[in-house]
Image (tube, rainbow, N blue to C red; front, top):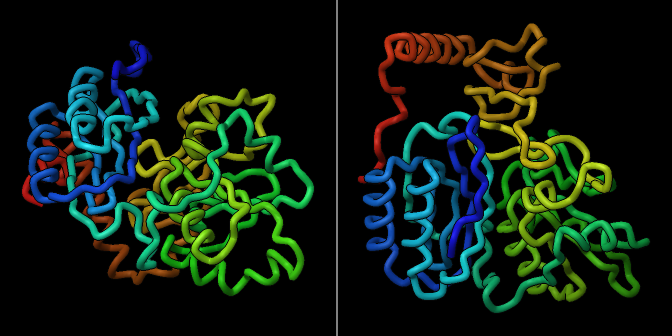
Length: 321
């Protein structure tokens, strides 16, 4: 499959977010081949492989990303792999990691298989109509720090710290959310769609049939729906050095706290509790003075390495992991 022409001279790096549920029988061989190819082509990012499929985000030149995607699409069951593309001015990752996991997105619920049962896919162009219907319950399945950056108007925030917490939250809140009558429509969304495939499969296993999720996730919605028609409020957190993106997948305004990995707004960066590379208002009280001193020294060493033109400490290839 050809990659669409998205050439932007000022943004030479192509970022590819991808996932696919499919039976992957030899994760070790898949990991080894991917790590070797990515490192040979100068591609960086993170890819997770598991018996249920592949998930991750990678970045590099157009040609390098095309070669890696062509390789993945040769795997049985992965021929129709969908990819969400964006651009970056500089490499948003420090190194390449290819890891074998039990799940490509960790829910920790045995027997949940999106290949066997999943909710109804809703295209971005149809999403506004669904979530605007009276009685539709809209749930953000992402982590609390992601929701704080932006979400859809009227969405419920479960305030979960990890995706593992979602099943327990839903079971505790089910009666309050759904009531005792005919269950309402439940619409769910996440960054790229993978957590929603798992969460809708989970709700189906819990006996909820009228379940929907945003196909391609928030990223596809922001890419597809014009700002003037959008029901999205704020920015979308992404798991790379861009931190957040907005409509059209344009770079957002948030930075990243390198102590706790949470997004930091312009207001947060004006706080006396914010120190670049050391702390932010969200984590300052979670860390000891000794920890902050270590972070400060680490950040100083990273700055010195950059000034010398040396590789970042995290920039080494990760083929062996």
